[in-house]
Image 1 (cartoon, rainbow over the protein chains, first blue to last red):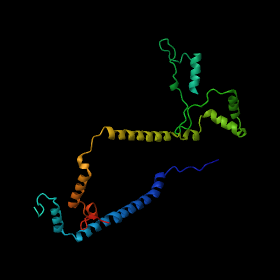
Image 2 (image 1 turned 135 degrees about the horizontal axis):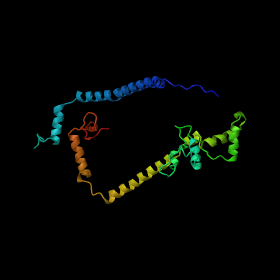
Image 3 (image 1 turned 180 degrees about the horizontal axis):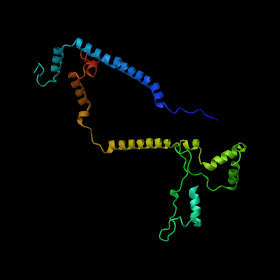
Image 4 (image 1 turned 180 degrees about the vertical axis):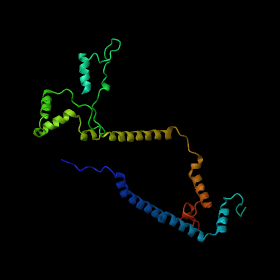
Length: 76
Length: 169
């Protein structure tokens, strides 16, 4: 009934050898997923919005709605 | 083992010269908690004393048999010897108690009770909400947000169709 001597040294090194590559890979995947899932669509949304944006038209629409205090709607 | 021997000596007063006598009062009483104790802990696998201190006659004869070859001991005798030295096996001492079920049950119960308290409070303690919560007022608030073009790129106003005066499909 003689058991093998258990591993006494290098336990942390063994764990790191296994877990660090996985950790790095998962971190890269998380970063890539966020970039292509969130930031790229957001940049495109802003680009598309401002491609056809007419500032004066929007300003006049807001003025007519009566939200400004410095310029009242053209009727008054 | 030493402590039990010391106790017997105290009873017999055999070593009066080496025992410190305090002003004629005799030896100080030995408290239970000062003696080596038996306890089942994973961190302390071999306690200071055996579990069974006073052996019955069968146990005494078993101990004598233990002094011989262990190969002739039967399985029940080996287990009996183990139980003399130890109270619970590692499996028995490590086993969970199921206490967590009572804890979780208590948690749910008190959360439920708190819910009842909150309901009673809403009915009997709190007054009316401000007029700004009225549906008409809320409608005017929403219209003002749309007029101000709140979050026109990705958020609130981006979902409103200004030409048709409706939410985007």
